[in-house]
Length: 117
Image 1 (spheres, one colour):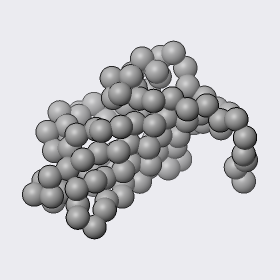
Image 2 (tube, one colour; image 1 turned 45 degrees about the vertical axis):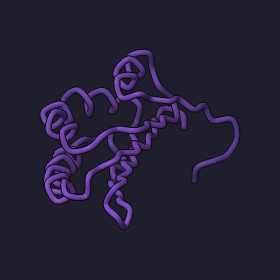
Image 3 (cartoon, helix red, strand yellow; image 1 turned 45 degrees about the horizontal axis):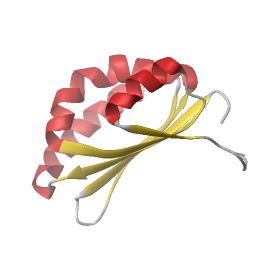
Image 4 (cartoon, helix red, strand yellow; image 1 turned 60 degrees about the vertical axis):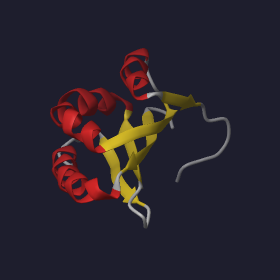
């Protein structure tokens, strides 16, 4: 995880809001796809449409531009439609990244064994 940050957001959503959220997310994904330092950006939902996870992976230098530039224009509407219940962050964070992600209730986990191929 050197020079990379992974995160998993656990969101709760009212199923009645899912279609509006999906439409918003499609716009966010399109904007995020243009970020050179975002390597994974996926949304997944449970069958009941009550839980959404966002799986993100960035080169460390890509986290702040994503949050501050790409996501910010959508943040208010996003947070009207879902609640961030938990955010798990793995990898090589900086104090600046932590200051930003702390606002989402981040819990930071440090790798101690394993590998990536």
